[in-house]
View 1 (cartoon, one colour):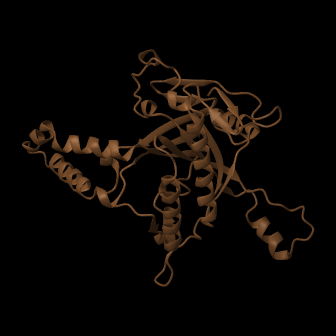
View 2 (tube, one colour; view 1 turned 180 degrees about the vertical axis):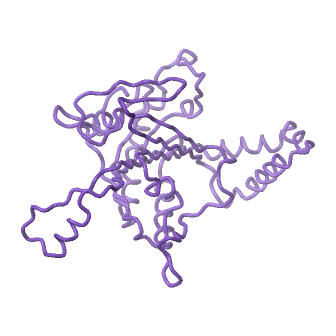
View 3 (tube, one colour; view 1 turned 90 degrees about the vertical axis):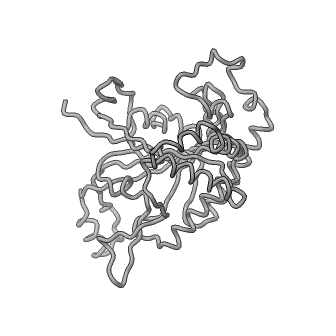
Length: 324
């Protein structure tokens, strides 16, 4: 990170990021039709972003004890009994953030072996174009309007102080580096080794989900939650609920959507499907390759009916306290 100016995070590679605080619907209150509407709103909003953009949704789940508000003198007997009933009961406190990033074609194709010495310009030419930056910021505002107008999710743009922090409060960057939602006076020691990663007395375990082989055969916006469903009532939960509130430990759930150029992606798929190497692999007795090749060919034929423009990645970071 190079600087934070006018509510935008600027990286040393010239990437521009706009951060939002997200307010989601309460759990167990959304129907199947409303989940479909939320999903449609996300898809509609993502389509307005330019090529080579990144949508990063980050969910924090931190164990806390419920602190009742007993100072209000206007509370009724039932309200006061409700507060006492849940006093000091553990629960997962949820916070959600959204980061929209404009990067370049070269940055989207980076690998771990890449070095800035391999290119002529340290900062991509696209980022230095004022019109490109202005169009991205306009698209970001349109993105936020679409989500807010859906009526289910609200976005609030973070200010510079909320991102970097002040003398009295810790910003989002400091909280992430210390893995704490509270105000921290100083950053803790970080250790990254073959045995794992540690920040202060917190031990991390990272899992990522980015390969198609790891995905389920079918996906949907929501699933039936059998524990709270009956023959007459249907309780629905998000498809990702098992790594969300149903995961009873401190963790951070990251979702990434990389928006590529659809024409270039289709051309790459067509070259892969028609290449001699791909046809040669068909001669092997490996049914998985045959199935993948047939699925890719079918998707290319159906391309006029949809847009191939994005790829996604998911990772979950578990955090546990160490006995020190």
